[in-house]
Length: 240
Image 1: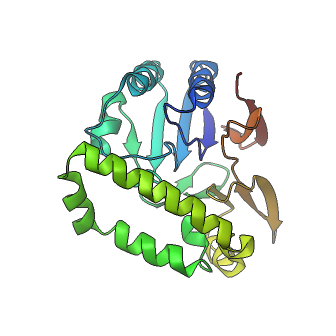
Image 2: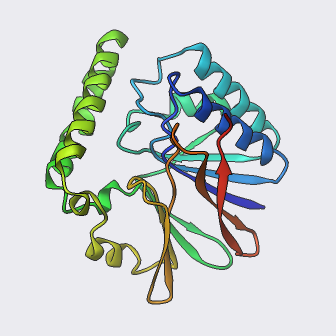
């Protein structure tokens, strides 16, 4: 069995290279008895499970084949795709995980999350997150027309880019105290969100920050863990 962890793919029809890279990944791990964990921001924006398009149909078809080969797909939401739910995942027998998920193997316990909750110094973002992800507001948004949600998502992306330009990188990064608390009862913390792939060692434990997938780069950092507990940080190539 292979455990595979990826994050921050930001898939969209505007970036076909990233989609091809993801489809190549599914083919590569098709016959490795893989448990695929996608730790948020799988899509650049998610306006609802009732959305459909040819580019997304291709992804669903590949995921269905991946699942039918005996592999398993797990997903927890990020700040870009928090509205993604079981209706979409059920198309290929995917599993929706809570925002923080503890994965126990024979060798160690892993804590999986997107990573945005660890950025506790970014008070403006944390306030916005609390509002936009309120169950009542989400329920109301899901009843609005797709066209309205598309405009709303575009506005959120634009606001996010503008906010990042004027916010200190230190504020947007992980808070050390939050990391220490997250590592208390686990052996390894795995997350994305910050787009700063790295391996951090702390008190004989590891924090793995997964890489983001971007048009401007030729690869993305992903994590592979074998059934025996051996792990490696891998540069996954994004095709031209």
